[in-house]
Image (cartoon, rainbow, N blue to C red; front, side):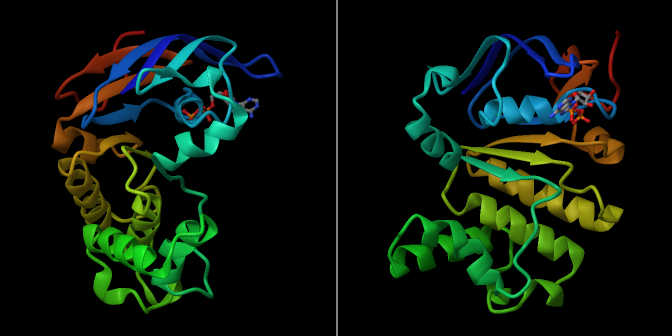
Length: 229
Ligand code: ADP
């Protein structure tokens, strides 16, 4: 589903953010991406979204080298990938329903399809009953669940999350992880970049560790450490 072959990314300032990355992530896997700040985790996720291109190597999604995609096809790639990044904010003056519906409206879907898809996404994160509330009426954990619902509204095959529990206390973080696991149980491939040691150690999922742009560990049922380097 997601493959990287000899992927190297050097930013224009000379920083080598990814250094010869080789990885295969299968459909329906749940993967933690760990590593110190600056290790290359966000760059790794951005390569999958084709927000940026590697200097060397290939990123293959569903058998296709995404570097070769025509610019007009990139939006289709991105529709199949849900994203929850820390800096994605909710629209404060829009209801939960409207926040989740936003992308589908932009794409011009009919009202009945939008309603069905939004309620399905809100149901997955356990917030269908709060669809008419506004973001500031919700707790931090609930707001993050709305962001997750928003990322799922297109029914993507892949969900990428960057520090999804970053600013949340441990109980709420756990609640968010349960939502992500539930989504994974429905068949979505889930990739979580995180610093949350407790959660990684408790869940014992596949752990890929990056240090200085290199993979230092790739372990099934892994723990939060960066491995040998
Ligand atoms: P992480 O998500 O693990 O903190 P990043 O992928 O954000 O790591 O960053 C990896 C390295 O690349 C860091 O040294 C960072 O400073 C550098 N970097 C990230 N984005 C850019 C950019 N747009 N231009 C130049 N350097 C960048």
